Length: 71
Image 1 (tube, rainbow, N blue to C red):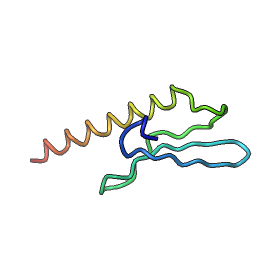
Image 2 (tube, helix red, strand yellow; image 1 turned 60 degrees about the vertical axis):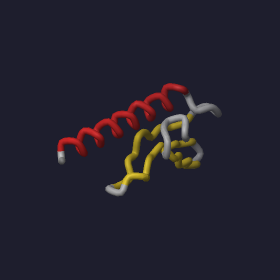
Image 3 (tube, rainbow, N blue to C red; image 1 turned 90 degrees about the vertical axis):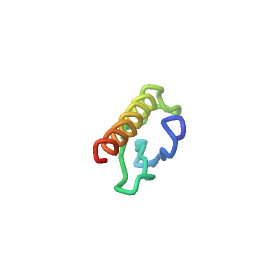
Image 4 (tube, rainbow, N blue to C red; image 1 turned 120 degrees about the vertical axis):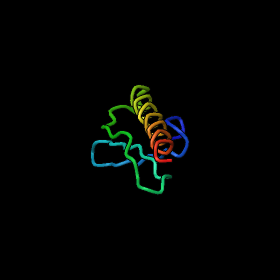
């Protein structure tokens, strides 16, 4: 799901309903789940992608801030 950010992956869960989980696992300290939702249409709604993108950006900014304050 590169539209949400570089390295962001998607898990698709099929149970009779469709669920999606956007996550990023490229950081050594862990896997970050950016967003999980029930998908009700064939196309992923723009607001779901935008929310994951916003959370990804906040994660990157937060990590940069942590790294600069630790020095």
